[in-house]
Image (cartoon, rainbow, N blue to C red; front, top):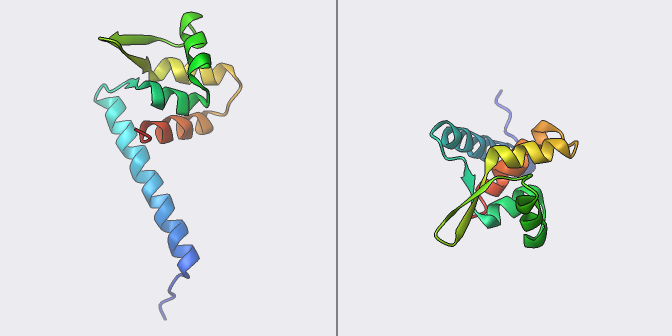
Length: 103
Protein backbone atom coordinates (compact mmCIF):
# COMPACT_ATOMS: atom_id res chain seq x y z
CA UNK A 1 0.00 0.00 0.00
CA UNK A 2 1.27 3.50 -0.88
CA UNK A 3 1.34 6.03 1.92
CA UNK A 4 0.54 9.62 0.91
CA UNK A 5 2.16 12.39 2.97
CA UNK A 6 -0.02 14.94 4.69
CA UNK A 7 -0.17 18.47 3.34
CA UNK A 8 2.16 19.67 6.14
CA UNK A 9 4.67 16.89 5.43
CA UNK A 10 4.56 17.66 1.73
CA UNK A 11 5.14 21.38 2.36
CA UNK A 12 8.09 20.57 4.62
CA UNK A 13 9.60 18.34 1.95
CA UNK A 14 9.01 20.98 -0.69
CA UNK A 15 10.73 23.63 1.47
CA UNK A 16 13.74 21.35 2.07
CA UNK A 17 14.01 20.68 -1.65
CA UNK A 18 13.87 24.39 -2.45
CA UNK A 19 16.61 25.11 0.11
CA UNK A 20 18.76 22.32 -1.34
CA UNK A 21 18.31 23.75 -4.84
CA UNK A 22 19.31 27.22 -3.62
CA UNK A 23 22.40 25.79 -1.89
CA UNK A 24 23.41 23.97 -5.07
CA UNK A 25 22.99 27.15 -7.13
CA UNK A 26 25.06 29.11 -4.61
CA UNK A 27 27.83 26.51 -4.62
CA UNK A 28 27.82 26.49 -8.42
CA UNK A 29 28.13 30.28 -8.43
CA UNK A 30 31.12 30.07 -6.06
CA UNK A 31 32.75 27.47 -8.26
CA UNK A 32 32.20 29.71 -11.26
CA UNK A 33 33.85 32.65 -9.51
CA UNK A 34 30.89 34.71 -8.30
CA UNK A 35 32.32 35.67 -4.97
CA UNK A 36 30.89 39.14 -4.43
CA UNK A 37 27.66 40.25 -2.74
CA UNK A 38 25.76 43.50 -3.09
CA UNK A 39 25.41 45.80 -0.09
CA UNK A 40 21.89 44.50 0.58
CA UNK A 41 23.06 40.89 0.39
CA UNK A 42 26.08 41.54 2.65
CA UNK A 43 23.89 43.22 5.28
CA UNK A 44 21.47 40.28 5.15
CA UNK A 45 24.30 37.75 5.50
CA UNK A 46 25.81 39.53 8.49
CA UNK A 47 22.51 40.63 9.95
CA UNK A 48 23.48 44.27 10.25
CA UNK A 49 22.60 47.76 9.07
CA UNK A 50 24.65 49.89 6.68
CA UNK A 51 26.58 51.66 9.49
CA UNK A 52 27.89 48.36 10.88
CA UNK A 53 28.82 47.17 7.38
CA UNK A 54 30.70 50.43 6.77
CA UNK A 55 32.50 49.99 10.09
CA UNK A 56 33.51 46.44 9.15
CA UNK A 57 34.92 47.59 5.82
CA UNK A 58 36.82 50.56 7.25
CA UNK A 59 38.34 48.32 9.92
CA UNK A 60 39.26 45.90 7.11
CA UNK A 61 37.37 43.00 8.65
CA UNK A 62 35.43 42.63 5.39
CA UNK A 63 36.91 43.06 1.92
CA UNK A 64 35.04 45.13 -0.61
CA UNK A 65 35.53 46.65 -4.03
CA UNK A 66 33.68 49.27 -6.00
CA UNK A 67 32.39 49.28 -9.53
CA UNK A 68 31.78 52.95 -10.10
CA UNK A 69 29.96 53.99 -6.95
CA UNK A 70 28.50 50.54 -6.27
CA UNK A 71 30.26 48.53 -3.53
CA UNK A 72 30.52 44.74 -3.59
CA UNK A 73 31.57 42.62 -0.61
CA UNK A 74 33.65 39.45 -0.77
CA UNK A 75 31.85 36.30 0.35
CA UNK A 76 34.96 34.72 1.85
CA UNK A 77 35.75 37.74 4.04
CA UNK A 78 32.14 37.77 5.27
CA UNK A 79 32.46 34.06 6.06
CA UNK A 80 35.73 34.72 7.94
CA UNK A 81 34.15 37.56 9.91
CA UNK A 82 31.13 35.45 10.90
CA UNK A 83 33.46 32.60 11.90
CA UNK A 84 35.37 35.01 14.14
CA UNK A 85 32.04 35.77 15.84
CA UNK A 86 31.81 32.12 16.96
CA UNK A 87 28.96 31.32 14.59
CA UNK A 88 28.52 27.71 13.49
CA UNK A 89 29.74 27.05 9.93
CA UNK A 90 26.41 25.55 8.87
CA UNK A 91 24.60 28.62 10.15
CA UNK A 92 27.07 30.82 8.26
CA UNK A 93 26.40 28.88 5.07
CA UNK A 94 22.66 29.32 5.56
CA UNK A 95 23.07 33.07 6.18
CA UNK A 96 25.16 33.57 3.07
CA UNK A 97 23.00 31.35 0.89
CA UNK A 98 19.78 33.05 1.94
CA UNK A 99 21.39 36.49 1.55
CA UNK A 100 22.56 35.57 -1.94
CA UNK A 101 18.93 35.16 -2.98
CA UNK A 102 17.56 38.31 -1.32
CA UNK A 103 18.45 40.48 -4.24
